Image 1: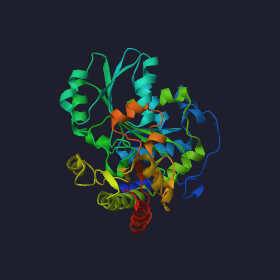
Image 2: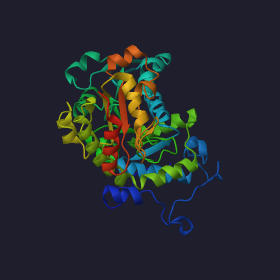
Image 3: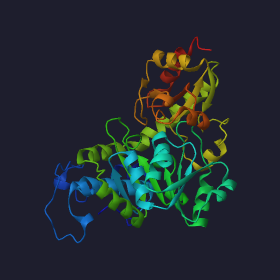
Length: 393
């Protein structure tokens, strides 16, 4: 599995590594772009282990290997592995590190799919859990059990854009011998690199910012070689493989990651500032705003505040739906992180699987609108939201 970060390479800047890290040397037949190896199997060459057999389901085609090396370099990890979706990366990681009788500490307010898996599905595997308030580290010790093995958080929560006390998460995990796992999809390596801050594993939905073009589903796990090996072994059995063509697309998308995210940071901040002044908006959730409760924390830890924001529209669900219908630039669609601006009501998409009473407890109203800000001209986005909000009060 050639997915290690080559620390003998020069310590190049992130934008350079996004383009050049992981590329085969010498180039295959002189091809500047990584070719697609559309082959399910390869001739054997004396492999010594099951996971080393050259077979597409074992996540070790040349396309996988190049992509793994690029991801490891971007996050500063020893190794990486990709999966068929973000949820495949999340569920496989948890099932690789937890067994029957184990216990997990998980952040309150997780993405809906992760929340449901942790709070419902893990129980069927005999794995317990407790949810923790990411802003109250003094309460975490009371949730510990002798069988607690890992702690799971998100860099920025979906869809309320809360920023947990990540520094305390790392300290807590080290003090109590827990594996610290973080989903950093919203931040990307451009804005925050968790491994450099002491986290053990960083996960991404590659469907989102890493790819950036809304045309594939993928997941990624990056970290120490031994932990990634355990995740890879479990993934090889569960079968959540990313096919070579999707590997190629993700590999290509990552090359423009830095440029895209920097523009999305700028656009989202401009839009958030406009929305915060609009009489049709009750409140804006964006860590780049000085009014955000964790703004100081985000400013200290992050290189940028990301392209995601959410807000409540005055007038309830009817007003929120009216806004979605009146906007001309954003597409009303689930998912996020692409070059185009997307808008949705989480109650009907990302958190539709969460019971209404749980959504209320999490602070997710039916009128909450989430925006994934793209790379369009920021002035055009602000003008479009201005006309979309006219008459709403």
